[in-house]
Image (cartoon, rainbow, N blue to C red; front, side, top):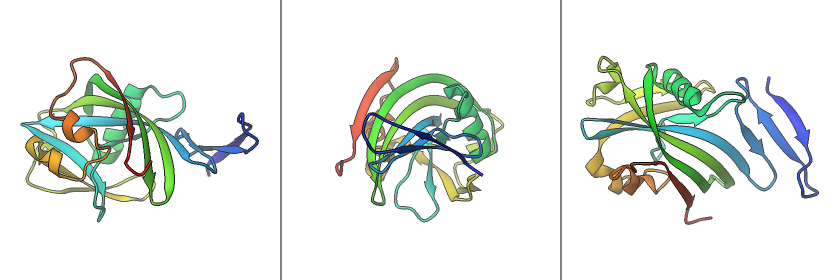
Length: 183
């Protein structure tokens, strides 16, 4: 059962800090939801591994929210293992992104750390011919699929900065501030 802690921010409204089963870092307020997330840029043979909620119309990088007292490297390794059932090696940080978006009718403010991650040469995920279904720990059905890098600019990949960013990975970490058109 998630624990909750009441805090008083600078405004007169009250905020709630949600601590899930693994104490995921999410602040849910009346105005918006805040997430601290890590994401994996997994590349292999000029392809990138992307995920989506089953039946959804948009794709995103594998990853998820960090837990309290967990480093970002630990978080991305845990997320790859939990979601995709394999181990990954964190190579380097690519982007620190402040991402502002709306999901459904709910505004989100997300801090995301995007890492280049490699899979072992014996990973079953390297089979690019099949869709890879999996279930997230919270019960959401997801699927992963490899896309040729040449196609990422034309698919519904979120956040949008990735459509060009994946084609030209930075040589050192970059700070990105991204607002969806609706924000």
